[in-house]
Length: 329
Image 1 (cartoon, rainbow, N blue to C red):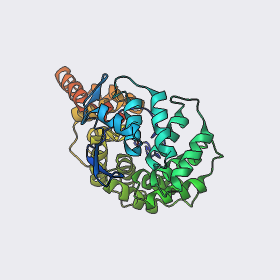
Image 2: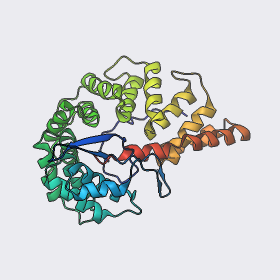
Image 3: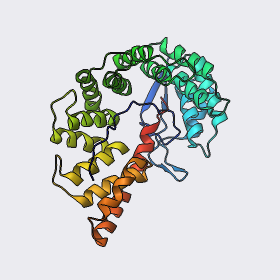
């Protein structure tokens, strides 16, 4: 398994429908009477093959949502689009997000923009997407700046403008959005809307990577592997690829396989190399497929069977889908 292709990229696909893990926590809203009105989050502890575990009674959430509490209206939108309430209902989700968005709730405004951007429960409408993202951005809501930046980076519904994308990513990064921090790094990395500066790219990747962003961890690892913008270090590259791979970042899984196969930053181990590479491929990343045949030739039938079983247990596909989209609470 030789060769080391560049695998750095920007975060562009945050609106792909997938599983999302939400944190359960009680919230307290002050009612008109001055008494506390306790509500709760929807926590998806397990969601596979149509099954979900909920942290609180959806009927109670729905009742509070009908009373006009925007947090719970947004929760019902999430429950509807993900099928937690018994089957996906994109049109129902759209209505819940609209109700909360019209009352000025920024997370719902961004979620509603996602619905229009993807055409879920409605026709695709980039005008509406931009409208609701700008409404949320007017409240200095960092995820709205990030999503606007993605639209300008891709040229989706707007004319592609790298300088504007960078400005928006910076605004989101100022609000602590790690995806935006990663994309600021990517803009410097590739010289998009700014002079190429991989030292600056590494600074931004490192910031987001330290906060747990798997894509930033992957991109930083690749810089260390090639010695671009940082002192070359196989040990650091291995460390960051491993962190990203353990979160289901498929490119990092394949690169971690490369590191094991070539003994870079770790002891050479073809069986573990095959496990990580296969895990990335089975999660849908075809870039590792060409490496599998060469690794298979290094393994006995029993080693191959064990490596395949370990790849299955890693369940990278579930991690990758969880990370691919997060409806905002």
